[in-house]
Length: 492
Ligand code: BES
Ligand code: MN
Ligand code: ZN
Image (cartoon, rainbow, N blue to C red; front, side):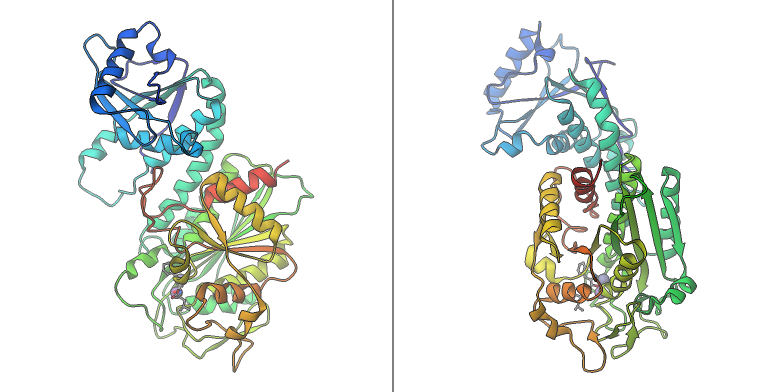
């Protein structure tokens, strides 16, 4: 639901746009291709800048009505100069800021001598920022009618190369948007079975999609996962997605997602305030699904397995109780202390199954797992728990590069005693303290000999403050991060 159907690239301004958007540094020099032979336009801009205090600083924007004689009516200029080098070169965010300034109008964005990769990043920023989840608004607001025909062209010398790069960048952005849509969708529409149906559509891109129903899951022995869904009228599902873009002998990379389509807490029911947010408790599954779409869309040269556990945590007469003991696929038994600690039960079986079945090079799971990670890290970093320094370092680097940040948290044997149970091999909660760590420690018991990382995305997948590139409740966090990891470390 990006309201920009596409961004195009051009050598020069075409189609007589009414609005031109461009950038300048603190010398206030506009791109040569815009002002060559148009000294009057440069002079007009400098006068307006001086009169309004616009000095080319990053984050500042000037929005002008052009004088008579100009080919376009409005000129919007964004400042680039910053003490922080990262700002001035961050074309993804600059693209987002441009879309913010345009709010639905068609325009030409004149970048001049900017590098091809930066032109494409700018397009990605525009595209991601233009996303709006308004399919359930039946009254057309001004915005909506305007954006229908919005056309944006980016003009620069590197237009040809930029066009090529955009096919890749756009595929990744479409993966993020796929994930955002899944997270934003309400749970009466996006049921477990509907989620699985939407994943089948990835087949069109060459992803092999296999849906396991409850009968199959029972046969496999995923009783920890099935226990979570047994109080819901909607049946549980596990969906396995495979993209084989690598060499036949390449070990697959595995991504595992928590897909609780709604988390009431079950019998240990949550308080009413804010419970509606729990429609986003499938943010891990959404990220894995969006990643598969991105990788297939850009034809990544890697073998990748994405696996999601789709369940609904509801409290009916069949629901799981505190005190119940379930036997997980691993054979280990789990005493349910709190039915609201359900995500780890889903992941326990998925992790065991994934390592066993696919013998992956690594496993990374994503989950909106604990409220405690929001207390610890807020909305700016996902919590990362891992048994591998190497995989952690690679994920941290991918985080910096993609601006989807992770921060490593501890795992250690000393926390294990907190989840030992009187009646079973372990219990599913560890008490009041270190809630995110005991959740990680629980998951670790279902990982044997493979590099593994658990990303707790409860604070980053939904409800984050808006950014330059996202005004969406569901952020799509994880797609850009993991795509970056695969692209930088595991292709060719
Ligand atoms: N889905 C929640 C975690 C969550 C909370 C995600 C807020 C996003 C925003 C998870 O299933 C849960 O309920 N966790 C409990 C665990 C507790 C019962 C040990 C929590 O964090 O309170
Ligand atoms: Mn819960
Ligand atoms: Zn949950």
